[in-house]
Image (cartoon, rainbow, N blue to C red; front, side, top):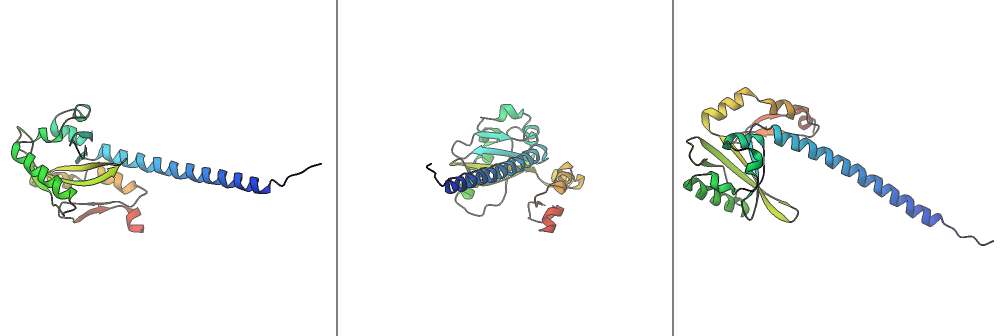
Length: 186
């Protein structure tokens, strides 16, 4: 009879199984977090748009952005973001993007949609995904419209309160409007 000690191989196989189970757990947590943030993106009452950093084409827009522009979200995707704004606003937006991309602290800029008189505050931040640069753009009405929104304390605040992740909502002056219990626990 010839025998071979396979305990080393069994130990390696067990480590492989443990690593796979750990990866599946992490992947599940990642999917759950993505689902929560996708839900926030969809129900947020503030207009949020994700742009391709090189072409400034709209990758994704939430329903609030669709309502603000008067165009369905599916028709917004793929369009040049700047074409929705008047000429002066386009110049301000390009400068704001250059400041944000250059890591300069850039405050929100005042812009107007083409053909509309409503003034909006635009702020952007840069993020990288899959090796490409993107902009996360937030559009919010100014003055009276913003005050009305804040005083109504939309459904967004209710959703934020129930999130298992720490979350803080602030205004354009960076004053905290609300923080959920998970944040307070941290």
